[in-house]
Image (cartoon, rainbow, N blue to C red):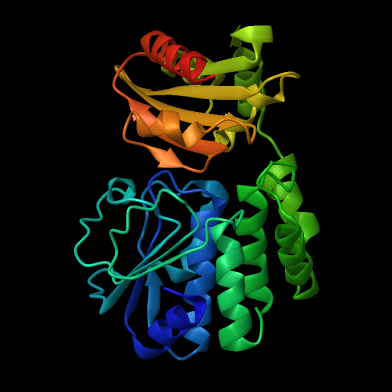
Length: 312
């Protein structure tokens, strides 16, 4: 589906329920909330699915858009959601009429798909829609889309950041996005529990391979308990291991429950992270991907390191 096809679709339908992905981040939530606000400006009925894993960091932004109990949508739209196994808890699928996404591994599960894999964030795609349908974002949409764009590129330091990403951020600031306060809230203000957890993570980093170019961080349930960190403290853990100079591939293993780990893989452009994650039913982008492994942290690390070294 082209951008114009998507605009036609959004104009022709109503009664929207916008769905975000499991373990929601700033991009899926900011993009969905911004599109919801845009649809309401167009006179449409639109709500967000109440994703139960939305943390306190983001819930203030999504609260005005959450669907009331008993709402029956006429059209379901998935935002930044690459596959059916990423549906949020409690959402039982059914017919998804449209998916707007930027993941090259999108499985085409929706009836219609607008996918732009060259975009650093889904927020950049929603901004294009705002420009074409409404002549640009208003202040509320600018804040939400700045959150979406900035969080998915690590405040413009990740390798997925492009000139278009910076142009999008500039337009959003011009449209009224409070980038100074948002940058403090999203990237600077850190709880003591988070800092304590980071200390544990850095103290236990492991390095492997030629010139120790593979860096692996592990986050166990015991570490979370000892640090006092809660879900709201765990944003962007995947970026920590890659800070080590000389790291070409970095992995973060988070123990979700005994015998089950969430994997976040990051790399430079010469290594395909998504190919490794695909071995475990996951996916994402070439330089940023994720999956789960049914194993404890130590076994998961052994499996990952072996696969990464073989690929290198």
